[in-house]
Image 1 (cartoon, rainbow over the protein chains, first blue to last red):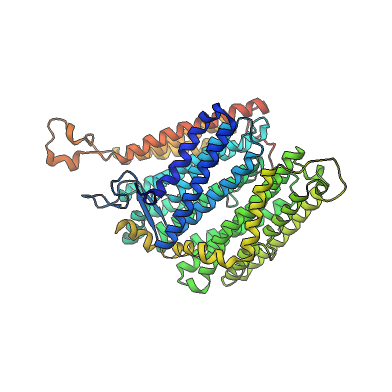
Image 2: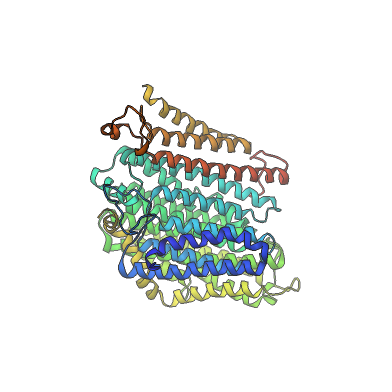
Length: 514
Length: 122
């Protein structure tokens, strides 16, 4: 068996197998369980790197589930794809790489303190990863719905992992209600498209829409998809579940939840750029830009008044999603108006790069906040203080995350934000002004946290965080600084293939439909 | 008209479900609303695949009285039914999760009124 040929299936299958193996191994011993989970995730990570390398070198990769020849998309005696097709282009590969990397870092972090009910924790953790990867690798709409539900169910259960605090269940209930409504919207839209075209494959539907033009049913389906995925991606004013879920989830789960959110963002991009593509009306990019602006505004203003450290970072995460939406909306607007080279390519580069930077920056802050809560058992900013005396490394790492989120020059946040500012300025200067002002407020907010948590007289004697926690934070901080110092390497090698996949959607269709 | 009846039912079910989710404050009623919404979507999928007088798509076990040249008109496409089954299974899992959350919330807060469950606000 040629392993390279079956990479896409293995990447989904290995964590899925390990997820259901974990509760069994947990009965034997905790160490074996941790080893199994880590080996499964590390193997997935290595396979994903192979996959990403292959996709970036040889173009789109196709895998047909259950076919004797995994690259034969259309079976003999049929005119359309019938089996489930996994289709990995530059964007899917980019998102899969982020998801697995973040899950691996989150796992190292969780090893340091998750002991009680650990078997369940790691099962759900791996299932969440399976959901994300499935959404990102699949080329089939119904499959997308199934993996969306897997990711939602696993994340909702993880949010309420510390169920003894009632508020975690409250957040999880909000999350699962929003998720299931969004998923049912998606299913209804899939039903509409299926009724019209008899197709479930994304590439085949994209081709059908291209040939027949946009019908009314397509438009209803588009609005349902858009509403559902924007809701799941946390675009304000549909963001209300996000601060609760991020704020109440335990340590690393908050960080991995950002990756789940971004998988929904990926689905939104796939629907807009690949399935509907040129038949979109300009209203859609305009709506994305407006959602982006509202998210930035609500994110920073609500973050200003928070007392709970994790809720505050969660609102900053809402604002970061706003930046991505702003850049993506401007990019889509440029693509529809045939102004790709003028500003759309740069806006998309900035937006896609910011997807990676957002998860690194906010992820690092969530990990630091999780460490502080783990050590001090205190979440309220007014009751924390003077931690820099005992937690030297953590405070330095927090400073790095702070500078990155606020977009200060040597960090990665600056590298992507400057691209967003430059490109959105060409559409309207107001967009740039709002984005820059929000960044400044963000700096003020995080300086306030740093001041109230780390500086001041020593309140009590504390240890520093456990070593594995520190290790995972240092990996993130190293990536942040590396991305900030050498943004060209990242943009040329991993961002550009994703941007090209968005702009040139014809390849996505022709690889399946021949 | 009579053929549109299932689609009208779909609209009614989705409307009732959305109404319950948006306007009802009792968590159990919200869970019921989600279930009704899901039934509406499932009914929509199953209606899409309906064919009057259709037979199961099994070539080796055709009912008597159907000649092979009638097969294209008579056989039902199995995909919508497979989708519906999958969706029902997922729906059960989601409903179980929502109800277990509701139980835990009742234990911690002593109420099921969504208006009073507000420790996380702003």
